[in-house]
Image (cartoon, rainbow, N blue to C red; front, side, top):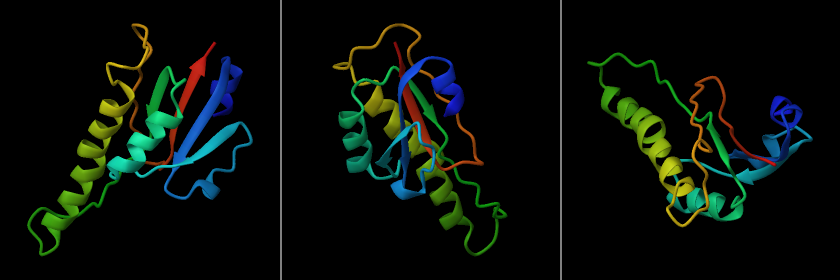
Length: 121
């Protein structure tokens, strides 16, 4: 997030399932679980000034395909990595929002559980 501010971001939102886990002083914490559509829509509504979306939410269950809990593990991975990501893209690229070409960016990093979005002015 410091790099975003250094690059000229006037505001950085950091979404996390537990907003108090966001420790960066440059960030505006928001509650966000990308598999919870109500939270995704609330984040998009709250963060209406976003012009760049960086999605770091991801999960890797590292479960073998043919074991007892594999369907559950795969479902959880798809809920976060595919459908959650689709929720974010859909909410933040709503046709009613004012975007300029090239404003959207989507990055997945399975090491982090935060979403950072910013507006460069």
